[in-house]
Length: 333
Image (tube, rainbow, N blue to C red; front, side):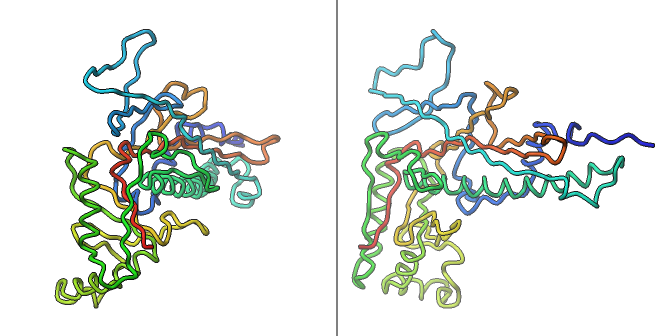
């Protein structure tokens, strides 16, 4: 008679295997994640040092204690340390969930249980992805918010940088919308200085977007665009160009939380290097101490008397715009 397979102590269920498994699950990043704006930067500490120099922020490299740090006598610099947010998530797989689909003493029960575990991990990862998207949306607005709406970091106030706002005055039919676009482009290009970029993108809340595309000067331009394509298609379904800016309706929500306020638009440069980053700190596990952080970790622990297994996932990301002055808010007052 075969011995009982100790599935939860098999190599499939150790931290490395579970983390590798969750990394392979389908991604559900939301629109900003799909744009690939944020560069993943692994760090080996639970805090990140960010440097300010003339309104520009850059990352500092770590060094051994007692060694001389980076210096630049040509400019005044100020560095600050920020604790990386810790985002834990827990679930469980109970024996009752796999009852009647596993056979006592079967050598094939691992496959069945692994399917249940993967389903749980997929749901947990989806929650992490939604949280990352919420933080990304906050970073392009200059203020990263927690799930309860409280501020994790406001990058404008942290570095004493004022936010640039352009009022599009959409309620007035004669407002020159191309001039408003020019004001946005100039603000971003002035903030970038000589830094190359490939364009400027706008993510708009529902109300702002609907009023923008309905504005007479915008609508008239698109009635002539590609032989009336504006009249044939719904503009919220894909980005479009106007006034040198790529416009897009961004209606990503979780529950009642709109990631971009419905009456606002967020403008930011695309095709830049190092301006948007996600710094990943290591998990608070013994085996990950002082290692380079991964975007997400997964681990399990068998419950008392073997009635099930507790699943734990966590991510430790700091989403940051290293040059907040390039961020512009669009309003309609």
